[in-house]
Length: 220
Image (tube, rainbow, N blue to C red):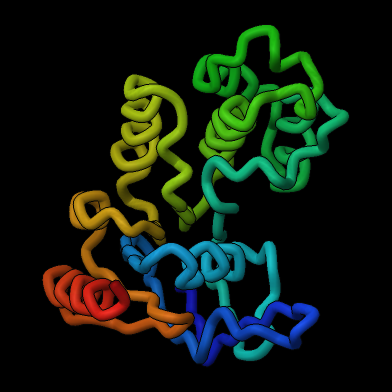
């Protein structure tokens, strides 16, 4: 289980601290899929980074009773001077996974060809995202964190990503951050709405999107 209790997050600016998340409470059980919806700037990506452990909350607690992925397709943790394959080996070593048994999958899935032998700093943003997604699939996480950036590549590659994630790993917990109602409805059993840093829970997907539409109309 993942449990967030009274989580706050401040960023410090020249004008003083800015609170991006306010008293967020969230519980995610094993195998559960929850969507987090909100307008741009509502704090969705910040929330995902906190759950992943990439950043720490200013106050409150985050308990992780299961292994949690980094945000899918996020390549910010790559060492740019290392090749794609060397980054795979480093990440596998950190998670105690045999890299040799995963190289074939990453080669096939990422479709990077000879570029896997080149430094990651030479990659385009799309190439980094494809490598990051492929490496995410070789670690046996209990919960996957999904930002809308998971929609990388063309339609064919996007379909391949969806099959690998939502079919082959249908039993895993997922936290999906999006403002796309169709995407959340397709993949989640419940949703919560993030408005100005506060997370509002709803009894059903319909209630969540009715609240989201209302808040969007007010802000327009």
